[in-house]
Length: 205
Image (cartoon, rainbow, N blue to C red; front, top):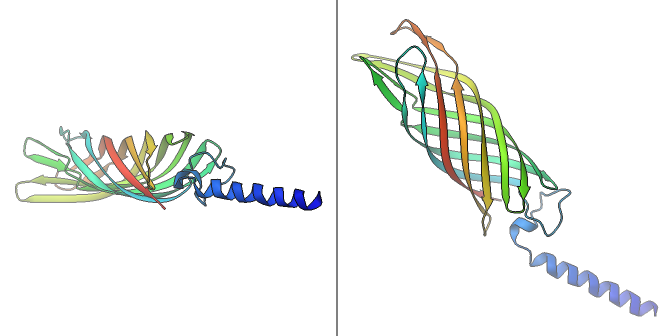
């Protein structure tokens, strides 16, 4: 009877190992803690790209820059049960610009460093995000150009959808506030405030 019990235990262990080996990546990522084996895992590092559209305004200018943006992002998630926490950074090129009278204002690039906190329903993650924003604000007039790099804050919400083969797709809205700084060529303080809607994809390692 003793040998029969040992054999049964060994077979049960082999069966459990085989079932774990058959799980998709998202169900057995090595970074997961306190996560059921049969649940999708959001834990671990990722890299990806995005494209979107920004629209907003520049203080004391009469301009409302808008245009397409695109860039790359990367981050790391931790997960405990359905709760997901992470850090993400991105850098964006922006075509947002507008002209009022003789003055043209644009935001050639910006970036963010943010925390993320969300709730996962298997392979769908709903999250809020917020943190530091930074970027350029450029003022132009005939024969004159001045560019300032400033910092500020950002906050937003999003949803990310787990896909096969380590991929995920997301939709996200951010509000970005870049602080005022005084421009010599206008004699006024200017800062950029804009909303950003974007779509992105991530590859999860």
